[in-house]
Length: 77
Image 1 (cartoon, one colour):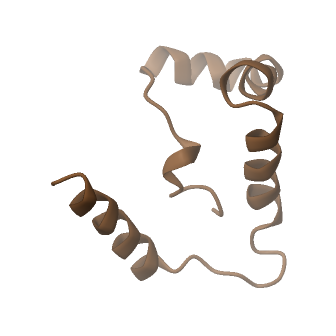
Image 2 (cartoon, one colour; image 1 turned 45 degrees about the horizontal axis):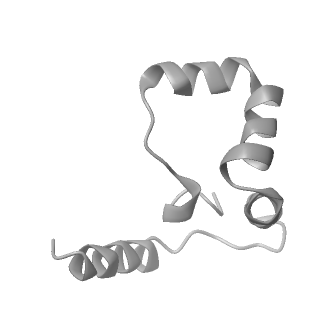
C-alpha cells in the first residue's frame, strides 16, 4: 500500500505486459532494477513498499486524493 498511489511507481503498459510481469516475477524485477528504473529508485520504492504498515501506518486517502488533485491542477486538468 505504501507505493500504490505514488505516481513514480507506475508507467504506461498494456494488459499483456502486466500479465507477463505477473507470470515472470524474477525477470520483471531484474528489468525494473537494471533497465527501467535503476538500482537507486528500485531500492527506495521497494523499501517503502516493504516497510509500509509495520509501524502501524495506514493509508491516508484524503491526503492521496489531495495530492492527485494537486498534480492534476498543475497539469491543467
